[in-house]
Image (cartoon, rainbow, N blue to C red; front, side, top):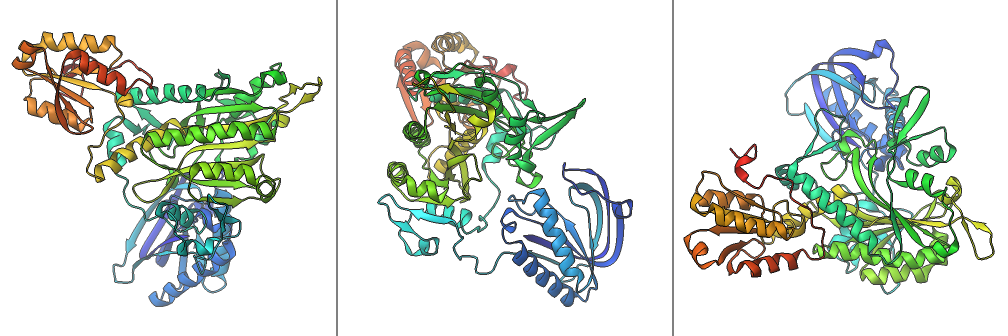
Length: 608
């Protein structure tokens, strides 16, 4: 729990409109209130408070009452405030905990509570003395005590209690994961640098939409399309048949399997009422693929096979959790479901998925640190399988034991990078699902002509498109801190080559070269602006363009290109064929997305 306390000479609020579906209903008496001489406690209830609510409430009550005594204040206002943390409790849990806090404090002093889940206008006058403002983080006592249900598993099979993690020779990034996930320590925080660069390439919030919805400018669209196509290439590379499908983004809760599956997401549902129907926007491609595949006539000979969709997905994340390119309310998920005859077949297929997920992050020069969510019975009965997964990672993993029969899956692996702010960030994922085939009525015919329910693997091999892009930017800035030039991989760079004519006399040479590159599916443009060459080079470098070609008299006469190569900051000479060969070799395993930008920079708004 986070508390920002203000000793107010005057405070007034007015609830304007609901901000959340689960906002509290309020009487008109509490819609608008004003107070003189009061301690206003802006409070954020966090996810970790849900499991320890009684202790959290006791500790928070003690701290607030202590502050009242120091200030000589005889009344308190509890003001729900979602902006002090990015790790918010579910709304229903937050309301419950705030009510407990209200009741606890009211035993000692007069207390008021502003409504939860409303957009509110407020006016405050702070006294301004040394004790008038304070902030507190409320946590359970003995914060580093191990949390039940977590265990560290080493590649040699050694099991380590969480209590011992500091005394063991473990990777520092893995310790960060343990502290955040098992011990619930807050991450250091700070302003993420990647946001500036995301916006530079055209990834932005859409201010005229709901919170958490993004828009993609021309350069961002090229990046998104390239990553989208690459996610499909990754799905096809697993060595099993994969069918690409498309469908709707909303489903009717009157259908029992839809309702049952949707209930697993609780407060995160994005729902709407249309005519007499209650609809839910999908939070992944599960609904569409399962609704479609239940109508297929499947034989055991067809299994395993996959279904894949680039699915726009919707989750009603809390305002304080929203982060550009990482946590949104609308995002794009390259969802792959693989249908298998049995758990044993699913385990065999999962090895391919596990290796592919690691292969892709290691191509970026990064490493995952994994959380294995699973039941104790699955762990005890499948240790050989678990150990094979861990040995492939070749480093410790964090086991998180979940209650038996609570989830539709038996194992769910979350693959986290540790970002530049020392925070775990989940990118890839997979899970083995033993419940949804029965729920949706998906069957196959076995060797004995009996109907059976397949086991389903859910996976996003590279994560959501936006999270993968987030990882690209975080990696670029990590490289910059190590003294390298920050850049996106050549295959995903919106402009792969920029040609800069020294003067207009070399425009034809530049255009001929550009056309040759375009014919080889290389994204190229020509900076024909009336600017100095040095400024044009600076602008190209600011856009992280991998190759900058300056065309002057020497280059035109000798037909030799002078190329600035960003990855190693070298200026090299090439023939045209040599230059094209190098670029094609750089991008040979990746999608070739055509440029959607005008060839000439001078035609683009914002460059003038």
